[in-house]
Length: 87
Image (cartoon, rainbow, N blue to C red; front, side, top):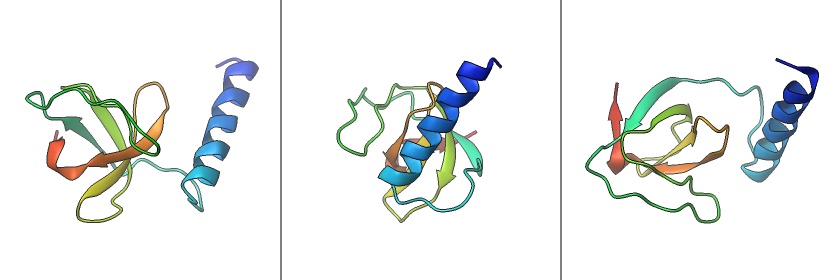
């Protein structure tokens, strides 16, 4: 990675920690896939935009309804558990 790309990632991680009040280091717990039968959803506020069949990194299991995830573009947000499938 170039220095510029590394600094950009660090900035995105700091913004994520501030927005979601996340403390500690960001670590991936597991990866899950968005249900291919799910409809595409646009992200709003703190929700992550979803594409059917997309692989997401799970950052935190927040509650029974939502999971905090990161997509391949390093964007963070909440995803409903109902549309997630284990790999």
